[in-house]
Amino acid sequence: MAQPQLVDQGAVAASADRLTPTTMLKDQWNMVKELVAADIGISHGKSWIDPLELLGLDGMILVLGSPNSFAKDWVENHYLEPMIKAWKQINMVIQGIKIVIHEAPVTIANTNSVTSPPQAKTQETFDSFEKEEPGTYTGAPLDNRFTFENFVVGKPNELAYAAALRVAESSTPQFNPLFLYGGVGLGKTHLMHAIAWKIRQCHPARKVIYLSAEKFMYQFVRALRYKDMVSFKDQFRAVDVLMIDDVQFISGKDTTQEEFFHTFNALVDKNHQVIVSADKSPSDLENMEERLKSRLGWGLVADIHPTTYELRLGILQAKSAALGVNMPKEVLEFLAFKITSNIRELEGALNRILAHASLVGRSISLDTTQEVLRDLLRSNDQRLTVEEIQRKVAEYFNIKMSDMVSNRRMQNIARPRQIAMYIAKQLTSKSLPEIGRKFGGRDHTTILHAVRKIQELCADDFDFANDVEILKRSLQT
Ligand code: ADP
Ligand code: MG
Image (cartoon, rainbow, N blue to C red):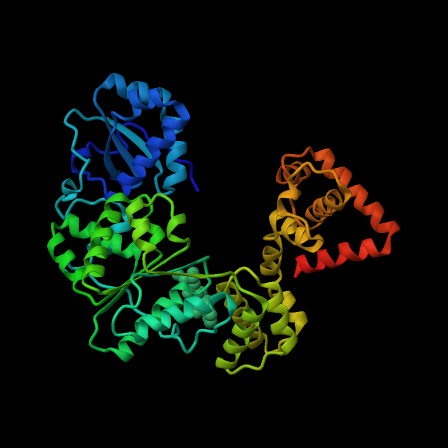
């Protein structure tokens, strides 16, 4: 990825007047200003960065307006680096910054001013929406594989599954909203689609709309731009069931949040069902307005936990059966053991093995599986964290997790701590100082000492070596 940089004068045509920043860009600019102020000091930020006007994007060049040429020169000479650094963190699309003198600043403080004429070209990302007709706001299509029938239920997802099914079958909301959350690739989208399919089947008259929070935002921005808010509001508020996937996407996007909040309230007040998914619980969502977070937690909050071995095996069995292939039992077990990250990767692994088998025309064995998935298996191994090791070891020796970082020296605590240090060195790619930091900021020599000590003890004491070996193996699978 190319480094963003200061753009040559003249590289951007004198077209600043035609530009209009999008809501998203404005939100990003606000974040950038905060980052830069943190970097250069609040008072410098106030003096130099705050007076800059965000004018918009010209291609991939960000255009800022400065009130006079002195300020422009000063900022270019002193604060360009920190600004570029901050933009790089927030929006990788931006390839450069151009500052122009802009004496008549445009108002960007409230959303009403974002209604520029349709021909104004703003950010690349919105292009696909410009092709859509204004006045129609649509949901996303449903994937016909994502049904309740195809969803394998296990301990980690049974609550979410039961709640989803209940919502889909009931004719009036039992809890509102239903908030589903969990890590990536654990089945949130699958459950959302399953609900939508089921409602169509059980209650065909109900109007259901399913879309990602991202798409909600784009449509909202488009409605603002085309001065079409009335129709936007009418359409979203007329549905019986509104489903918004990945609501964390609107974190930090204040105007979209505001609109979503009102839509949400309008629907819930009418007793229409709202279903939301996210990667975190309502209270853990960052950069979300408090009142929205609290409102999202009012109904039923159902989390999807990381997968267990049983669930992974069940999913592999179900998927291979559905595909009509006969996978050797040990291959399925091996995959369920090894691919622990999420279900999407598990599916990906299965598909790769099947594709390979049909390509080379050989039957599937444990050996070919290991060969085909070599890179994937390695990256799954690397995911083992020092915290996980600490937790497992603490559990095994029945000591507190906090003792992994404490200074307590009793042998029954210090020894397990050293074992955890030793295993961390063996099973992760972390350096000694990095491991030291994870153990309450200990010095790297402490870690080295622990590693040597445990090696010695393993050589001398068979039972001890056995304990360490069991722990290591249980962490590796
Ligand atoms: P998320 O939205 O949580 O990131 P998805 O719903 O997209 O995850 O799930 C990722 C993949 O895993 C999809 O192909 C989905 O069908 C599959 N999947 C997830 N959970 C299950 C499950 N319990 N049973 C069967 N397939 C599942
Ligand atoms: Mg999803």
